[in-house]
Length: 146
Image 1 (cartoon, helix red, strand yellow):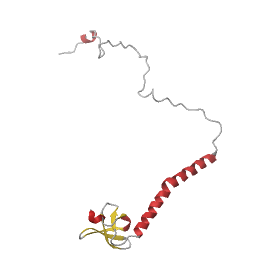
Image 2: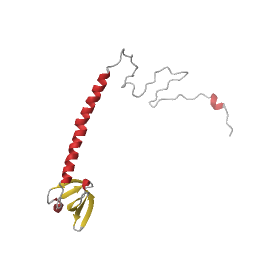
Image 3: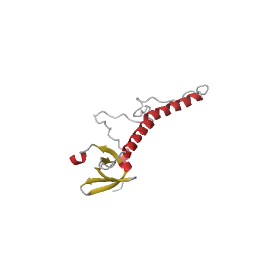
Image 4: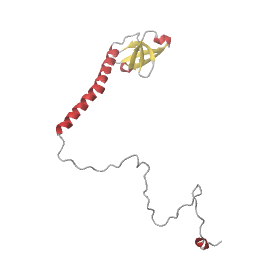
């Protein structure tokens, strides 16, 4: 069936909103302000005037020094304490101690060398691990209870 141009000349029925009210006819440009979704929550940031003069360069170094002091007391010093305690614990290990490795394996130390420890995790089952992987010394009887 060939297309005819008669459908273009016919008036279209009025389009309605979902509630039945007629839609306004749109001709030309719409003169309303388009709001962005979050414009009412965030105020626009405009460039400020440059302040006369520079800041004191000494204040920058004072802030850096304060930041370093805060990092030292909050991060570096506690980590050094934990590291020192761990090294002392590893140095005091002896055969027969019940230990837990970093991987969570619990066992009794069967033998030791300078770098490695042989941990017996069950009757006849021995695992060789590095000394530094021992994370905790457990109280006596923990392996038997587990």
